[in-house]
Length: 181
Image (cartoon, rainbow, N blue to C red; front, side):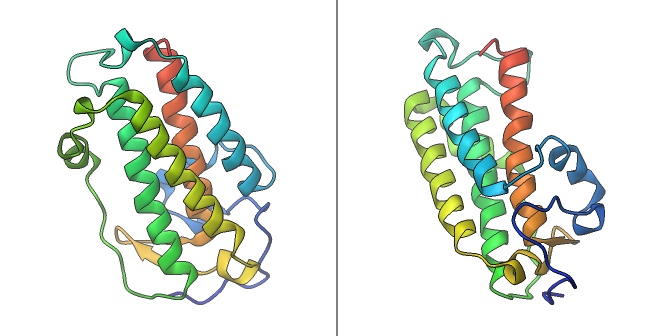
């Protein structure tokens, strides 16, 4: 399943709908056209600025009963990027081992993000993003077009990069709209 797609394209090519499960289209559609590496770099700076402006009294804010706090959203963003970047690494290296899904609703409580400061979580997210960027910068077109199976669905490395960017855009929009961040 890790064979490269024919006619591999650069890191600027939007993944086709056939490169990921339909569910992830909600994330990839949020990403602007252009270099995915530049998009991820720009997002890192924008998100850092957003999080730096969250007042201390809002770090534990939940916009509704049962929803995550601001700190938990940021911890979730870091965890999810790690999981997707790990998939990206494995598939880009030609690893054909199917990878399991993960349950973010189990990860968030286990992460104990409420015991940390928002600043430390933001710094962790930035470190995760920097690692993702270094990984992507080292991949050629062939690696970007490789496929693997994660959560019982085929996905390309390129799609994983766009999903990472779209996932962040999704949660940053929620932070702005529902948390007044």
